[in-house]
Structures are given as structure tokens and as C-alpha cells.
Length: 229
Image (cartoon, rainbow, N blue to C red; front, side, top):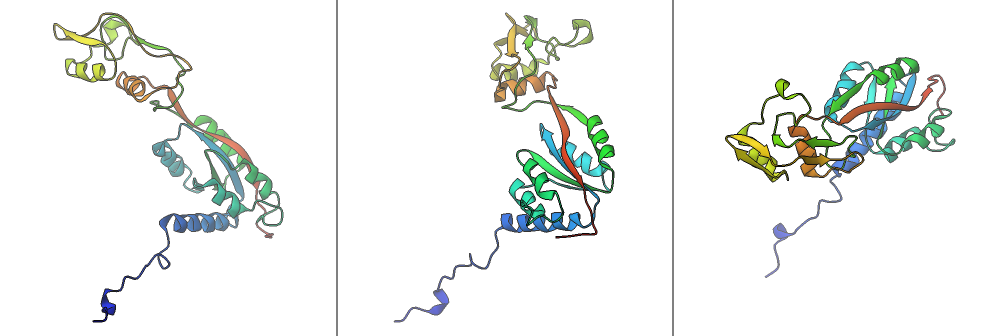
């Protein structure tokens, strides 16, 4: 008996675009459109990336367009050679598009943007893999909520319910008369040390912010919208 054609399996891979490719095409087109729209293009780098703070930048610079995507796609959209660049000098700008960088198209003057980013620095908690800029040691005795950062009279003892949490993060604590206790000081991290997940969690638990989200202008061009290659 011949096999029914109703049961034939048909591959749809050739007819369905991958989401990643669609996003890249959208990014490419949006960047090229922005070249025709805005007079200033600035390449910026980001330290200690946080989406929340990047959203703040987008909101405060709502008259501008910010792109943070695949660097190869962004560079190709601008043109990586003098023959393919959309505007004169853009191919020179693309040499800076590598690493953790983005593009900002804006109606504002370059100096205004540079001054804005100089002021836009946000403190945050370090994540695993970050390099600690400080030594952090929790003193012997009753463990305080801020881990000894403040004088005892300005702090409060760590909640007893957190004793198992800090012990699970490596601190050799115990409960003594309802207080979280250390028999000897505990070194959470040292300056220059790469933080593991437990160290990063302890720094956050004790409220110690050691990371800074910052945006640094790397290079910029003033676009001539009258001529397009």
C-alpha cells in the first residue's frame, strides 16, 4: 500500500528566518537610517554594564538614538572601508567599535554629550568575576549588618535569621545568645582579587558597593547629511 502524502514531513528551516538574523538586519537598517537623521555620532564604551542604568541614559537622552548590539553589525552598517562608508571618515570611526561599546546618534553637540557622560556615574554591587577595588574584612565578634563599615553605635547586629545564609557563603559564623558571631575576623576579599559568587553575594549582603557603571566617550564624528556615498 503506498504511503499517504499526508504523512510526509516537510522541513520549514528554509522558510523561517532566525530571530538573531532578523535582529541584526533591524539593527543594521536603523543605524544607516540614523546616519541620515542626526548630526552627531559618538562611540562609547561601558564599564560594569547594567541594563537599568543604560535605560536611564536612553530616557535622559530621549532626543537621541542609542544602539548597543553586535559590534560587527554596527561597524558594517557604518562601513569599514573608505569605499563602503556612508560618510567620509566613518570607516576610521569603526576601528573603535570593538569590545563593550555602543553608538549614540544625537542632535546634541559632542561636547555636551561628553560632559553629560562625565557626570553619569552610578554605584552598584559587584558581580562574580569582577576585580575587587578594596579589602573587605568583617571584624571578630558580633556580626553587624554593614560588616563593620560603620561604628557599632551607628549600625545594628545582623539578623539572626541570616546566620545560615552567611555561613553558607563561607563565613564560619555561629549563634551566640541570638547574635551572629565570629570567633575571628573574616576576610571577604582583598584588593585586586577576582570575586567568586560567594564573595560577591557577601559584599551585597553587607551593602558594600564596589562597582561603578560609567559610560566613556571613545570617539565621535560630526555627520554631513548633505552628501552620502
